[in-house]
Length: 158
Image 1 (cartoon, one colour):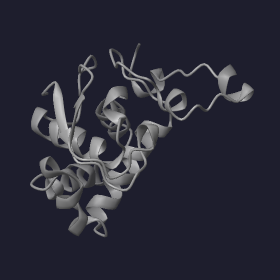
Image 2: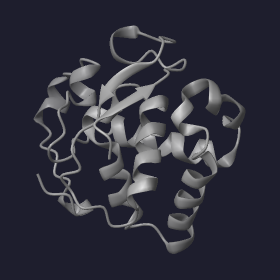
Image 3: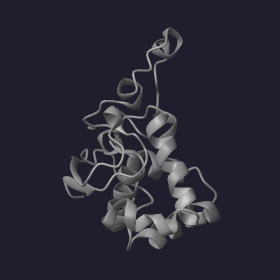
Image 4: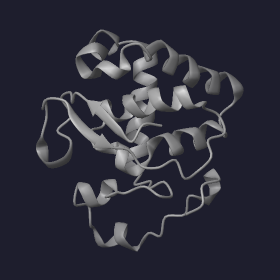
């Protein structure tokens, strides 16, 4: 997986309220966990999609999360993730503007839901640089801070 992504950010305010900013290089975290469902090409496309849809998400390793939950999906749903990535593969490297025509498609909506879940669940892949979503959005409620996140049920070990 490349170490730097060029992502054109869409309408999501992203880190520090920077909606609609021009292309920026965002370092992607190392793939510390072995992927079980996605090949390198699809993982790269998915990482680009996640970063475009949820700016800054590459710092937490959303591909590791999505690949892990794919293992728990029934085969037809797993296939739908792969087909959705493939349907968006040509547009993905060209950022938000290239993805705009796909925004209402089931493929985009599925990947969008997965990207948002991967980031805002406060997941951090092993080796990810962070900060986590909770840190990024300054979500420090007393109850949330008491939770010790254990992602082992996904087969992802810190």
